[in-house]
Length: 188
Image (cartoon, rainbow, N blue to C red):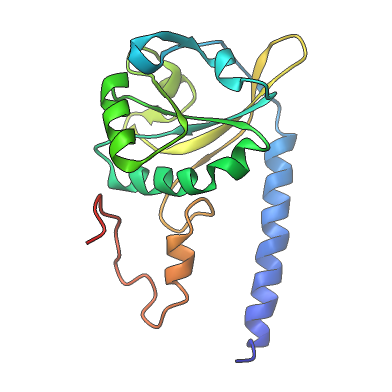
């Protein structure tokens, strides 16, 4: 099948726009992020700075918790890409669930990434993912400066059809498109 020239042109335009968007996000003034105290495994205290490990960059996945099948879908996908992601940056999933609930849910899903609870912190709200309409999923790219200062370089929200979750763009290639599909906790 030969591509329609309009499709080729649109794909090229989208690629150019995505590159421009990424550059603009990185050019924004960096936002200082304080070293929040979150809850790690076993309800132990963990500082955001400790989540960087040996990296100077950290992707924080702002997840709504086990009650959201959409957030579960994104996390399932990240789990599949985890080794590739960790070869470049640290990653942590932060949700309002307790560390115990996170551990049970992660074990059930086979998740391998670090998790932390913001249940007793203003972290999620302060980073703009908990507002008047409630929690919203997304991601923040944090960087640790040479002096230990934490800054947010960029952020993005998650939603159906975004660049962070492959099922929607893949389903758009089918005869009926996405056709109202929504994620489920179980596949059968």
